[in-house]
Image (tube, rainbow, N blue to C red):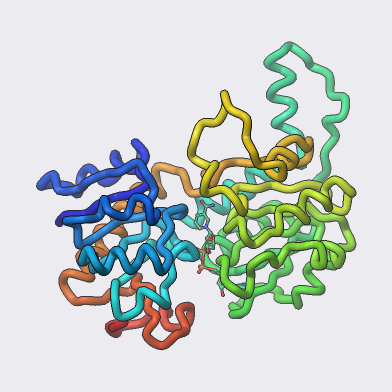
Length: 339
Ligand code: NAI
């Protein structure tokens, strides 16, 4: 089982170690891009993460190097041109490694922001026990609008209900026991809006100047999904104009060249990111919502099981099938070969 892994960190290697019985896994810390694609030579299978770039140019090279299988160590697949992969390379993902990890992180960010624990932590470390300007607000009875009610959205809704919040939701597919409203109503009536839908052509920049102008309650925006869901420039402007109470961000539109690296001794050349970080009502983490031991173990286990499905039957439940052109619908309980 020869697999070339890209964008790997120590914790990835640790979680995959037990499956590498013949020492055949190759771990690159570099990301897969057109500049690094030559590293796949000699491997029919590659394993990638959220910021590896699999566009047409890279896919042509992968085909030239005879790569047959791409294993995503994540749920989102916006970084892979699935349509172009069709009939060339099979793509599998890990649809759910721990929806709870992401949902709990979303709530951790929200609680931090509304109760100012990030500020209190720093104060008390300096023996400053003043409560000045630390006033927060109750989540109980507040209305939270959840966009995307899949695995993570549902886990997040359960947490919010535990807090006594009123939950309204929007999704293109409806499920039982969730109060759905139109996007317009959700924008209008929410005190907090949390994004849990994938980044697609339809959802790209769904939070922008125009949608923010429909938000009557100056809500807090939580994004633990994908940076591209929000137009970061519009977000920054709205926060500066106090059209929003705050933002809890685990993802950022331009994160791929910044997140997961240490720039603490350098000057970041991204004015929007700098602007967001400088605001007292923005909490930003660097795409770490999934990062729990439970999730990492599940990622490794499902990735290896996806590999085995492909080897043993040529398809699997977690293949991102493009055969019928409707990735979301096709993936629900599919039992056929994509090609
Ligand atoms: P899921 O596939 O179970 O649910 C996604 C839901 O979004 C589905 O119900 C789908 O119908 C809905 N949806 C699709 N397009 C939509 C649109 N335009 N508007 C409203 N709803 C739409 O996915 P899951 O596991 O809940 O993950 C959600 C997202 O969370 C992923 O796509 C990924 O981008 C992100 N994620 C982030 C992580 C992190 O560490 N920050 C880790 C894992 C996932």
